Length: 225
Image (cartoon, rainbow, N blue to C red; front, top):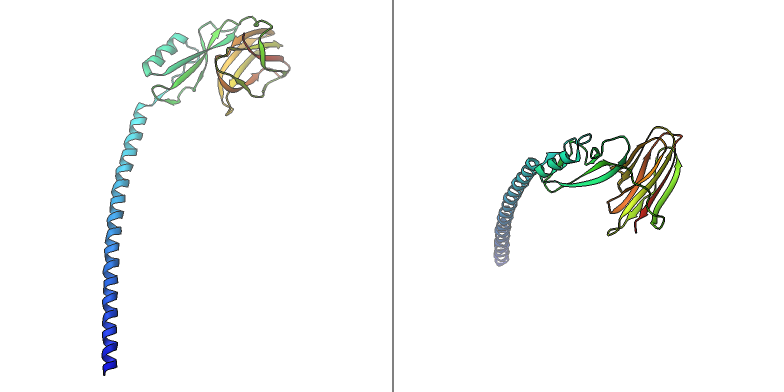
């Protein structure tokens, strides 16, 4: 009898321990439920804020207008109206009125925020090649179209590209960035021509030559003294 009583007392004690454990787990579960609820509320607030920010960004975005064929003055007015930073790069051209926009980056239709940079290639008269003491940064020659090797335009230094074409048709030279995207056109001339134009850029670029298959060309990027 005493043995059964002892067993009963032990079972009772074990049961109490189990009840205590259940109560502890229940409390932990309630704490976890509260934490989950708090996290869900925070996540809902964060999601709402993100959606609000995205709506504000969408409302602030303005598509870049098609500036090609217009004037640099009109482009400047558009840039000022929308708060864009206008960068004008001269494009040596013998077929367009000086001041005409021949290329733009980003292209028309690209969403832009206030403060974004809008670059335009503006037709200008071809310049004479710079003095022979200009330091060579890059040079290449060939026949037909192609994209050349990259080169670096260092800051604090003026640069120019010297070009020479032998052959009929239209010849263009564009600047291509490290991603392979065309930035702007530097040269847009016709027939056998030679000359130069400035490159007011810094960074790593390449030149893209667009000419007829039988047109010979020479290009030299120089550092001006």
